Length: 285
Image (cartoon, rainbow, N blue to C red; front, side, top):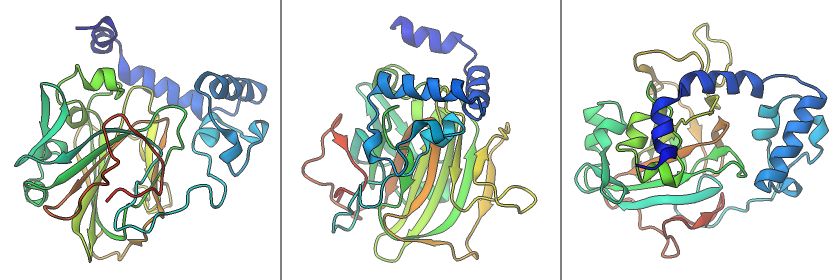
């Protein structure tokens, strides 16, 4: 096993992630601007696409990290399904009964990914999946691959391993063991689909556009708080409808999105291949 993987088992990943989240929300003035400038240079972030390219105007690192794009920067393909993020294809294809391919010698089950929700997992038996990795340089808002009505959401506690390709190739059940948020949608044309936002080391939190805190006040951030048990929200009677291309959530520091679709719901774009770079809005299927 590579040393980088061994260290992930040893290091206090949650403590590091909490500290990183606090720093990312710090209004540090010149320090924040200096860190943003270093990050842009280190990861070759294209700020010309940003709605606001002035890095000194971002009060916190998270404000910069979740920056919106200029209008028209990601035109939407005329397709049944579009890519919901900027990033790279980790894996995609058929779900073999309930098994999703992670990497050579590594599979994981839809049931485990969905935190034991058997009724929901059954809908994707022999269906399709796509696992999309967002690297540090990418745009980190997540959009809808097709029209959908929100039915439920679950916060699932878990580990905080990195989700980069090297870790995916060496840590069993990676996406089904990491902290995640499961969002279930219903599409009139395509049936049920889910979008799973998977956390990782240093990912401070995940947010959705509809979430409210326990008092009912608007608070898009789901984690923190981090609980030791699964938390569920039912939206069946809320009539929350999102159009294809609309923002549905974001990562405050980046990670991975896993999508599940019912059998025969789509055929993936012929241009898709593992490790291929992708952009929000391009044809997925």
